[in-house]
Length: 243
Ligand code: ADE
Image (tube, rainbow, N blue to C red):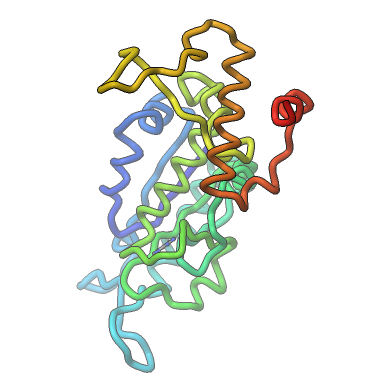
């Protein structure tokens, strides 16, 4: 998966680049991350990337021109790599809300150009002319698109085959099958008076699978009942549920 990120703060992306599973995926060449700073695409002595809004009001608006030049450069880089299917994705609270279904849909692209806004926003004409998709990571406002871009990248990278240490863990997590994740336990057997459920130490794999499934169902119904109606259950799961 190939990512080009248009950002005024490229150093922030050290968080995905230099740590954990995402860092390892980049080091192994399973993921490529290139940052392009709009400030490098300015033509004035002050390297301005923002201006006061027409019509007045608080804050500044990001200029269309440096962003357009940075996006065009990113598109040229994608073409050089032979990547065809590379949408420009703008992170904003006005976008479609990201969920695991959305992440799965985005997985089909060869890569993407992630556009991170700052200040009050971006000149609308840039969005009109260059943005293919707009995504939000939730109904709250952040100071910029960088953290949302990293959230999107992380959620996509972990779904790439062979990126996770144990491929099954990407499959078993919350939402992947439409249910919330089950509880997890490790050593010691007893922690401050609380025991690990016996079934998990029984070595009986089918019983463990059944227990985990029923825990997931109980959690989903209690915490996110609206998710439960969209779940498709296997024959075995239906049987467990009706026992
Ligand atoms: N930029 C600022 N807030 C955001 C959000 N909630 N989602 C995506 N991009 C944003």
